[in-house]
Image 1 (cartoon, rainbow, N blue to C red):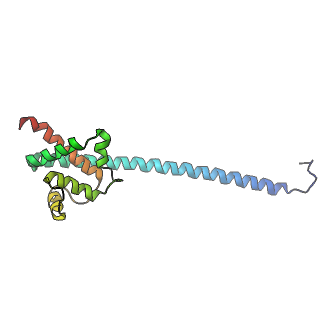
Image 2: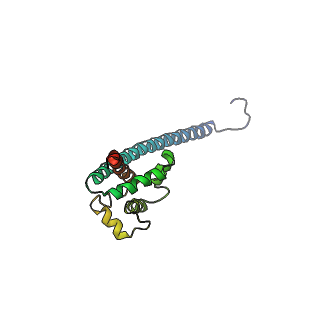
Image 3: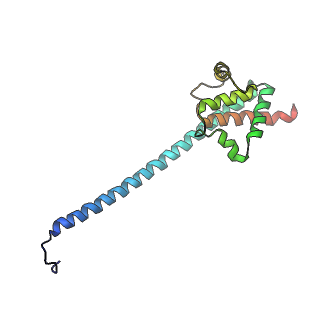
Length: 160
């Protein structure tokens, strides 16, 4: 510092350096904080999806055991076999980024009824005794429902 011939406000320069470093540290903390938020929300999402799937699985098994007709279960089982291109192919059907939950509920209904185009009233009537509209909205619930119903059919299929 003694070698510099021009006047320099060392305090101001040091202050700027400190402020710059503090700003950098704060930004790193914010990034870490946002990373924590993302991790926490991802975990919450997984828990919700798991709960939705389990609820749907229970509803599907119950429907398969108590209400479903042979032909309905057979159609659903055939649909599952035909649509599975490995695990990815099956899960893609229920990937909400490719479609919306309403169309998934309609799709499951149309498969069960053997009708490519279900009217809204048919869809509502089908789901009315199975689940509320809110319950059947999550794609994971619909995947669970489908897998539960198909599991029931496959358990008894050879005995029919």
